[in-house]
Length: 238
Image 1 (cartoon, helix red, strand yellow):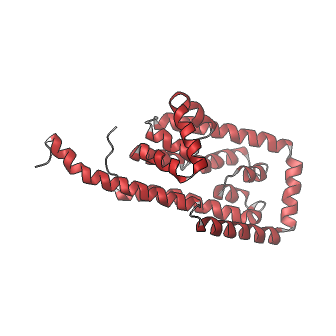
Image 2 (cartoon, one colour):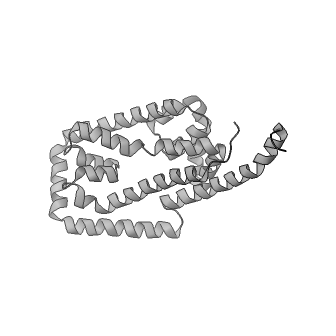
Image 3 (cartoon, one colour):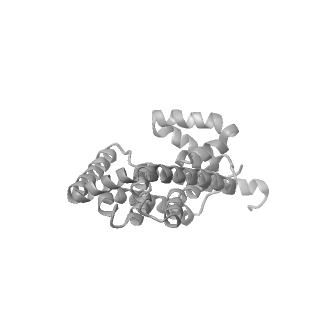
């Protein structure tokens, strides 16, 4: 597959949107105790981690819970797929280099994606899987159908389990509400300190995103240098 340089505004828009989703998640982690009973939908929109889904699902109508949770969980997936489609296997090589453990996982997925790609996407369409799907040419429509179906199944499982333990979940929320100021303070502290420590190692999600952006900027620069030669070989360049 021949890749061409991507317009900077397109690349910047995609990466800015993904970055905004990361920041919203951090805000949700910091303020969840303030929102869990007052505005469970706002918490879900900020951060749809399983623990927040469990705490909010019994407070929301199904017609609210399912579409909003689904959107929050999947809206960045086609964007990450697009990065993989734009830049190909270089994005997978980048993912392999980010960490030793992560590299082993990426190589495991690479070995099995050709045969089991649909199953992998259905089970867990995480960022690495999204990149791999895009880089391998996996059709976006089929990718989104599988990702949405897998996500809906997980949302249904959380809904079902949470309904069975509704009293316990309500009791946990009551404890949080009774000690809200303390829990909020602790949550903000954990988020800030955790991000500071990760930032020193260059290991936050935004660090990963910026590193990937630098990688694709370099790829774009290489493709821009090669484009005149390619056009000349086709006879399109004087």
